[in-house]
Image 1 (cartoon, one colour):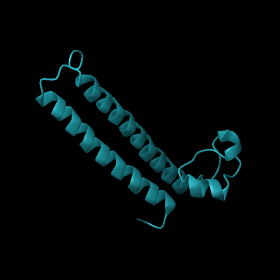
Image 2 (image 1 turned 90 degrees about the vertical axis):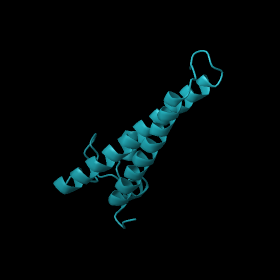
Image 3 (image 1 turned 60 degrees about the vertical axis):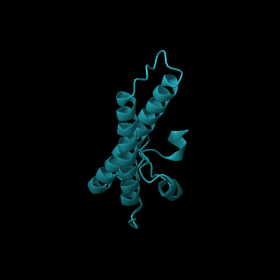
Image 4 (image 1 turned 180 degrees about the vertical axis):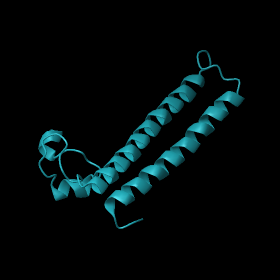
Length: 109
């Protein structure tokens, strides 16, 4: 990974999106090729749950990628590290822990 925390966050988020997309597509394809009736098949509820769980994880990974892209754009525009709520600087410890954060710790509470 890159030494740049934002680039590293973006790379990790993109990899998560790609992996979860493949996994989700596999679950959907498996459920379509089976005769499982989610409503009446005892295993159908498990398949539906797994599909929904993957959909939620994929949505979170896509948001993480969007957040990293937005942070990179803020950095390019000169606004990275500034709280979007109060306008104060975001602490270096918070940026180290959450490179794509938009808010300082006080506003995040």
